[in-house]
Image (cartoon, rainbow, N blue to C red; front, top):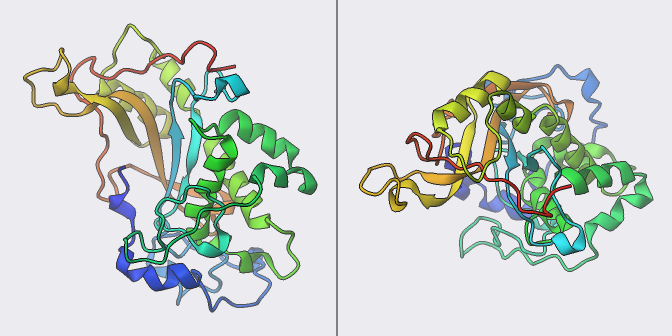
Length: 318
């Protein structure tokens, strides 16, 4: 996965990962309307410089809104299918990508240690009730319905995917720490607000529509050229996103045999990059090109017609 460009060195995180990201966080009310928004990843966004780490994203600060294109879920028989004419949510990633044991709801934690190495503190698999049972008691059935439609897992029940994204990513934002919600906050307020923030960003990113406007539509008969896909999404987003491909490498296919193009050939993911003013929850993002932080733009093949944007399988979308 193309994450190395914005990850904070693991060695610097090992101690904090087990203790909590901000163990000395202020007990103030964190009324962020009283704090001037600070741009994440800027010199003024360091923990020792901001007025309140609950009001400015200080740990990393590079946000990546990510989406999937898959052709089947593996759980169609249980009614778990994709929305028609829409990519689905993967997540909203911060700079730091390691789990905190104190808010671990993932039955299959990955990484499974607090520092991502075999020597780190083990992260135990979550064995409690499925987190989708938490929505109804807090009046969040509309959120649950939206997530079941647009945040769809492959092979696992949807809630397992959501629990993974929260446990690995939400716990790594300074602004989603439980202390930021005050001593009388409702249980799981951080979890629900994280999910709502992810959706706020994703609703601004109609990948399917942007591609369709360029006549790039799912097809099992026509391959597309990477530069055309990039151009369509750059027109929609204003800056170039990262495109991820899976499947065979082009030079391993019959069409690409003998070439040096070792990019993969099945379009499967897009990543949109941001910095954010103040809290990610405000969704006041500053867009970035995918290569602005030193990363690459794609894992896809560059040859003409080498990228396949496959149709969903029959019965896999509603």
